[in-house]
Image (cartoon, rainbow, N blue to C red):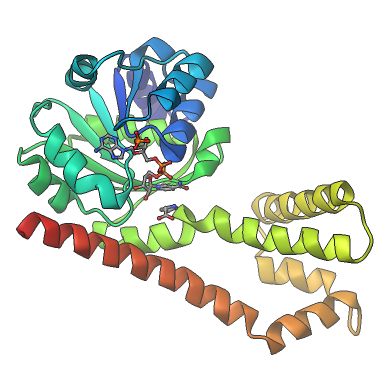
Amino acid sequence: MSQNNAAGAAGVADLRFCFYGAGSMAEAIVRGLLGEGLARPERISVVNRSNVDRLNELREVYGVQAPAAEADKSRLLREADVIFLCMKPKDADVALRGLAAFISEKQLLVSVIAGLSTATIGKLIDKPVAIIRTMPNTSSTIGLGATGLCYNDFVTTAQQATVEALFRAIGITAVVEERMMDAVTGLSGSGPAYIYYVMEAMIEAGMRLGLSQEASHELTVQSVLGAASMVKETGEAPAELRRKIMSPGGTTQAAIELLNDKQVSETLVRAVLRAAERAGEMGAALERSTIS
Ligand SMILES: NC(=O)C1=CN([C@@H]2O[C@H](COP(=O)(O)OP(=O)(O)OC[C@H]3O[C@@H](n4cnc5c(N)ncnc54)[C@H](OP(=O)(O)O)[C@@H]3O)[C@@H](O)[C@H]2O)C=CC1
Ligand SMILES: O=C(O)[C@@H]1CCC=N1
């Protein structure tokens, strides 16, 4: 860990975090923070809209704080140094307008909400508060996340270092201009889902060939893990590593020819572009809601 990152990471342990929205993405970050020893459970709180069972589950599993009553909710939000905005885009308007009464300009907002710009968050909160827009993914759960970050003008360099250290402890980070955040969303925010999609097909294929579900699953998982690790550890490009597998006239070439015939590569490219486009559509809808 670099000195700057270590300093930032050290700063993380002293902070109080409140996760406003307690779903899949919130849990992935909480689990990563606790698993990497970056934060203590007693300094993490989770609040949501109405699902009390979910809050109780998170408190029992991770030892984090959860509101026992509505009044607790506003206290936990007020006391937090950093509030993670972790609701779905469709719920952000109501949630953020409701948050405005509880927060002060000293607090830091960290959004994971797809498509939602820092400007729109600022309008909904209606306060000159520091906002860091991020796009993580659920692999943060096991410290292998990929997170894009961008900042509004109120974020200090110390806050940048702290939040970058936080996300670097649960994966890799990429600081980008805000106009590139929808691209990050389409590529790596949704990215694990594309790989799961391919894995589902490979597992199905193994079973059609007569392998047991367990063998097909294990062989698929190891193939994907191995391929990603080969790219990371050898530094060679995927195309070069694929070429090394494709014996002329062999099995791999036969498969790739069929994939090329069905334009699978171009379709995957278009799928990622569509996800980024969808993020932009969601952001535009939220922007319009602040005008209405
Ligand atoms: N899942 C993923 O892989 C990724 C998700 N994201 C982003 O993370 C955000 C959350 O996604 P995800 O975790 O999958 O969603 P979930 O549906 O799992 O969780 C949404 C959470 O938001 C809460 N919520 C909704 N409205 C309010 C409100 N008004 N006040 C307080 N809490 C509220 C819900 O509470 P309740 O259950 O009580 O209604 C729930 O806890 C989305 O914006 C998504 O774009 C970003 C990267 C990856
Ligand atoms: O599917 C979604 O909208 C969220 C954002 C990126 C991953 N999941």
